[in-house]
Length: 108
Image 1 (spheres, one colour):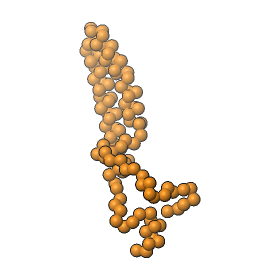
Image 2 (tube, helix red, strand yellow):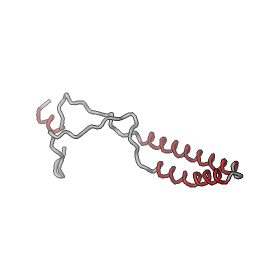
Image 3 (tube, one colour):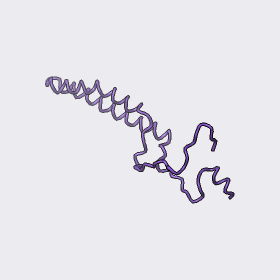
Image 4 (cartoon, rainbow, N blue to C red):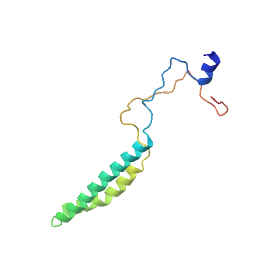
């Protein structure tokens, strides 16, 4: 391979491409968000049922009612929080200071 092609591609042949820091696939992210939302709503339902069961114990009843009102907000915030990082990836890859940054006019 010509040296010009190596420079144009931006890396040498012996450099490895890291995929461990890649984001989850869109479908995995969606299914994870749906699972968290369903779990939160299930806990909310149990809180509401327990509030009815403990209606004679006012303090416990109000704790369960307040929890059943707060859980939908928490569930929606968690579901819409954006793409979550891959939990298997704990590696941070810092930018290489020896390589020049791409400017607005460069096309590599």
